[in-house]
Length: 412
Image (cartoon, rainbow, N blue to C red):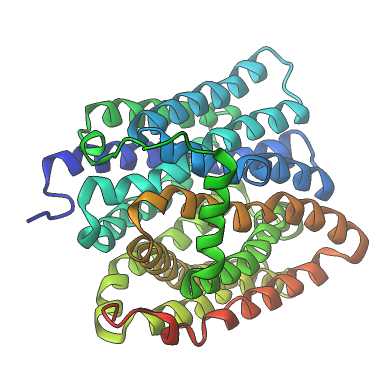
C-alpha cells in the first residue's frame, strides 16, 4: 500500500519539489522588493509585471492542455523547470552588469509564466499517474505541506539575507531550485508509457481543446468550482498586485517584516494542509469546500483593515499577521480539497485538458485583473480597490453553496 512520503519513488519526487519550493520561496520576497524599492515601480507598473507573469495562461492555457495530454508528463515537467531556471538567472546577471530595468523583469516574468503554464498542467496530471487515483488526496496533502513549510522558512530567511545581500541575488536561488527539482524528476520513475493508449486516428488539436473545455462546462461540480476559482482569482490578483506596495510603502514595513508576514501566513497554510484530510473525512467534501472558500476571505480582509490602522505600525502588522495566518488555513484546506475533487471526478484521458481548461478560465483572468488593479487603484485609490477585493472574495463562495447536490454518491 502506498504511503505518501514512505514510497521511495514518490519520495524522490516529493523531496525534489520540496527543495525546489524552498529555493523558490527565498526568491519570492525578492521580486516585489526589486520592483518597488530598487526600481521604484508605480501601481500601474506592478500591474504590468503581474500581467506579464500570467499572460501565458490566457494565450496558451487551452492548447497547453491538449499538447500535454499528447506528451509524457515527466519530461514536460523537466523541460519547464530548466526553462524557468535559465530565465530567472538572467536577473542577477543584469543587476551585476548595471543594466537591470523594469522591462527586463517583464520579459523574465513572461518567460517564467509561459513555462509555468506547461509545468502546472503537467504537474496536476502527473500526481494521479504517480500514486494512483485512490491516493490522490493523501499525496496532494503531503505536497502542499511541503510547499507550506517552504513558504514558512523561505521568506523570513530571505528577509534576513536581504540585510546583507542585494535582492536580485536571491532570485539566483530560484534558478537553483528549479535545477534541483529537475534532477529529482529525472530520478523519479513512473508508468505513464504503459498506461498510454496509442491513438486510433489522427487527433485534431482544436477538437481535443473543445472536448476538455466542454467537460469543464458541463460537469456541474467542476463548473461550480471553476466559477468560484475565477472570482477568487480576480480578488487574489488584486492582492498580489497591490499588497507589496501597501506593506512596503504605505505601512512602512521592512523587507524582513514583509518576509515574516509571508512566513506567518505559510504557518497557517501548513496547519490547513495537515487538517484538510481529517476535515473532509469528518464533515464531507462539500461542506469543507464551501466553508473553506468563505473562510479564505479573512486573508483578503487583512489589508484594508491594516491600512485603516496604518498610523500604528505594530497594530497594522498584527492585523496582517493574525488574519494572514487564519486566512491561509482556509486557503490551503480549500485548494487541497477542490484540486483532489477535480482529479477524482475527471477521467484520466481528459485530466490534462480539464486542468488546462480550468487554468485558462481562472488564470487567464489574472493578467486582465492585474492591469485593472493597477489602473483602478490609480484612479479610485488603493483603499477602495482593497474593499472591492474583499467583496469579490465573499462572492466567490456563492457558486459552491449547493455543490453537494452535484457530487456522485461515492464522494463523501
